[in-house]
Image (tube, rainbow over all chains, first blue to last red; front, side, top):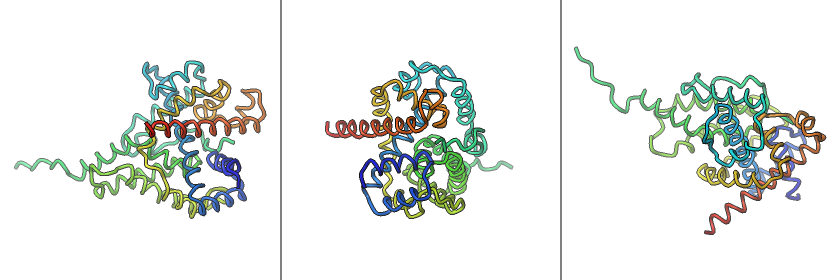
Length: 120
Length: 181
């Protein structure tokens, strides 16, 4: 299988839009190939980091923190005004970050947006 | 009669210390869970179950050892439990998940990647950065992004795949450079 096809399957998996046949194919590849597993983690790492960095950036912008981290996404924010939906998400995340106990934050509540992991 | 003060390493102290470690390392644990559990709702369920189990088993954790590794071990079991409960045919098989967790990268590498990723994002054209913002920060669907960007949903998916592919290669290349210095 070409790397491009493997990448497409991994992308679809990480976006939650695999078909049944694609899920079976990707599972077979991952079970049988260390290279496929390494590729999966490379792509999952980028996917996860983007998600975290951009959500953190929107949160920091929403609360007006002057020195947001990660710093690179401060530059990212310079060209992109914070849309209302992002502010809403960020306010939800602020609530998440505020709690430390088992039911004080993200660990006992959803964002209220349903299963937004399946975006495609 | 005076009571003895609570010893420093009481079960309550240990539980609180472990809960604080969980909060501090939540991004690394969540990244591990999200890689194996692409559905956000399922990932939230797994994170919640993991936190409860980590709290319940706090006394078994030896403070000063690898917390992220220990918590990810618990999260791995919770992902598999969730997989068995959901019984969906459109997700990876249990054997594939187990194989992936056995090859999972060390969480410490993540910090390097995060810093490098920030620089790589800046090299993308504005339109691709805009799509990334919509996808990961605003959590827009491909249909919503298509309307906003004047593209077809398929073109949005192709563009996002291209952007992530570029970022993956850019991060890998920069990591190689950093490690060769």
